[in-house]
Length: 172
Image (cartoon, rainbow, N blue to C red; front, side):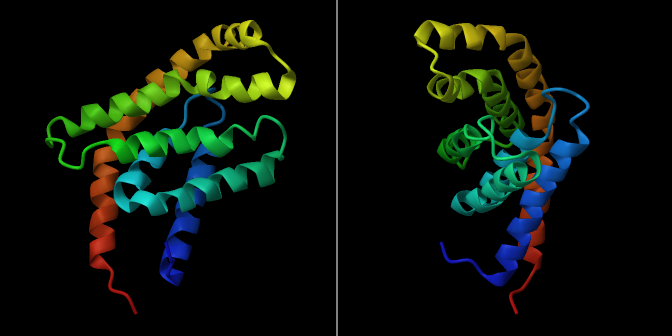
């Protein structure tokens, strides 16, 4: 996956947009555009979408601290990237928005469950402690999933925009 200078710049900007969107929306707990951006970038850039995703993760650690809360981010966003990569490319256009919204929502609903194994390992929780941790976070996961579903409506138009922009630029 060799990158051009243009791709380095684009992916840096896209990762920064992810981080900026998170900061701007922090006043509403568990409501953000990160899942939508992760899916959009994956649908447009496929494997290379990992670059802006991990730039976002790195920026998050740099500005908020590389603490124990940050470690699960190393895999949580990759799960959504992987799920998006597994989606068929030829989903009927009328069904596409709904499929993307549901996948984005599922990631939000499962966020605490995906986070839990790292919490258990880092803080010495047994299986029952991990389940209790998941249950305690369910109200936040509900907000996360519902907001991801709503934000997911932006995926199709942003994919179309990014693809149009990519096709309109010629390499130097």
